[in-house]
Image (cartoon, rainbow, N blue to C red; front, side, top):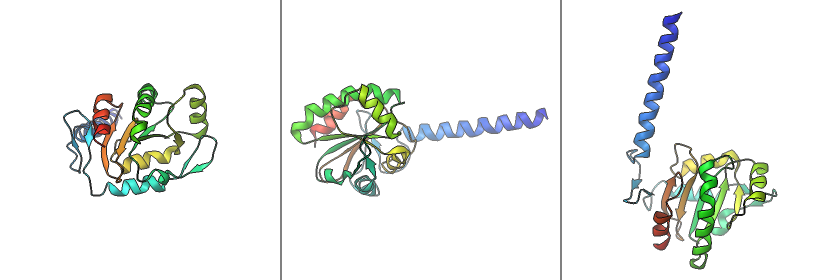
Length: 191
């Protein structure tokens, strides 16, 4: 009986260690796809390839406003956008929202639109936005938003996750975790 428990525990430990090694490998840019880390720590995406389909998925994604109205993000085609995947229960997501709001105000004149995609319930997003004012539109994707984030390369499924897409529909950068304002400004200035 004890032998089975020890073997089961050892198996769980091996699986957890392997998952940790794979996660570390992916997060440090060694995952073998078209991404590479820039000097500023922001993951830079290739300008073409399979990630193009992620942008098409974004335009086609079913999103709703906090009052339940269906919205299409395709109206943003042809404009540079910053898409921030977040959730009301995600501490780092909430912490970075004031900075993202300020960046939206700073870059609005350049035609850059920030968009929040709540990977959360409509009720949670609505309650959150009643307490916290955000300077950019926020839509609800539900937990299907995690699949959309994965299409952009967020295989870890972590939040927050931010994607910068230029006016031509090319992915210019992605960032898992809180944004580095300086690095994001550099990307936005290059658009």
